[in-house]
Image 1 (cartoon, each protein chain N blue to C red):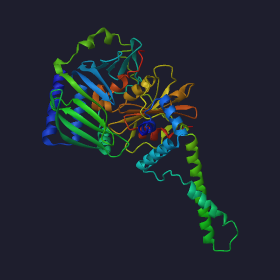
Image 2 (image 1 turned 90 degrees about the vertical axis):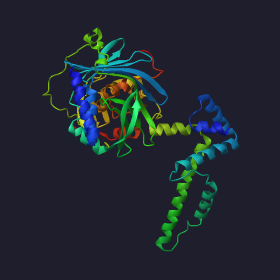
Image 3 (image 1 turned 90 degrees about the horizontal axis):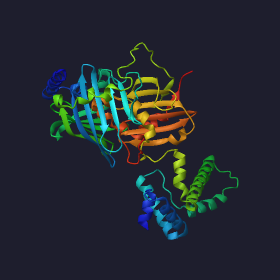
Image 4 (image 1 turned 45 degrees about the horizontal axis):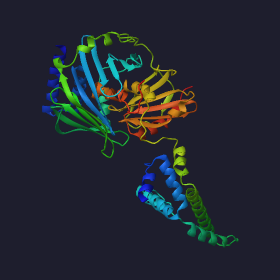
Length: 166
Length: 318
């Protein structure tokens, strides 16, 4: 199962396999926990500035504390600033939590969302034969002609196995 | 005969640069000279990712200039012929002219400008000797000064100065693509029969090169704000493109070794399917529709570079 989750995260599963597995993740809290841990591991390995963690309890606790500072105070400005900062921090965490919960509810939409946001197809996509004209036009003026001679035109005559005969 | 004189001249230059420890720039000139003036034919293997294919190349210089043919030996028939700046490509059962008509590629090669750009943007050094296709070679490494371009490694034939092997490496030192000759014939042994063939004689538009040198430089108004340092604009033109495209504006930038082309054209229905990043060996292509125009950025540079360039295209005209 763990191997499957890993494969899913690497995008190595076929669509039907992925859907089956995502269904299991939704239904089984144990598998779901594995899924979450794998993402946490991935996040840590990528060394981002912040890491997703389930912080529901801590945020709730902070929010409970918030309630007590609603009454006006005659303390110094410094204190107010600190309170404001604290509530801002709590709000940020709340946003983080909402985002995390959205992921919990609908894990399979996350990759699609990420793809839409970046507006890009996966990097490993091959240049389509339809774009050959641009490669040819580029090659005409590339200095690689000087260094590699005619062999530099290889990019424009190479073919992909899935390419159909024109 | 003429070609042999060329080869001898080159061998002298090449050996002089080797023996005297002259600047690597002399060596680069020798490589470019060999590529353009030597008669050779051979077979090479090209590889990127898990893709491997074999191609045959032939380059012959006669009194009419250089003739060059590149043909794929695997899969569907693919072929390119070049002659004095003209380029033909095999498409739908015939040879079709595909160059811009502006004489690209026929200019003197490795101009001083280009050489100085190259040594500014890459650290060039000799890293040893090796044998390729039975020939002794010297190995040169071109290390870029930043991560916005690839590292190159080339194996240069000690005798002729021809490149017998070439590899492109990324910043993790992984091979992005490489090609290597498996068979090479030089001088009078090179296959030259094809330049007198009907196929060459019947090339459409053969010899009809625009002689109009007074054509004013194009100023399309399109600019790139975030071109990586060291890339200079070498060409700007409005060109026809094969197929149903409207004339396309093309800007070419070069750092002496690699080039980035920026194409701008009016968007038409269905163009959104072309959007995105794709690659073929060391060549990356990034396409995007912005305000009714399609931008295509192509270059022998890493994906991050074509993306950076495309995202900084701007119209600065009237």
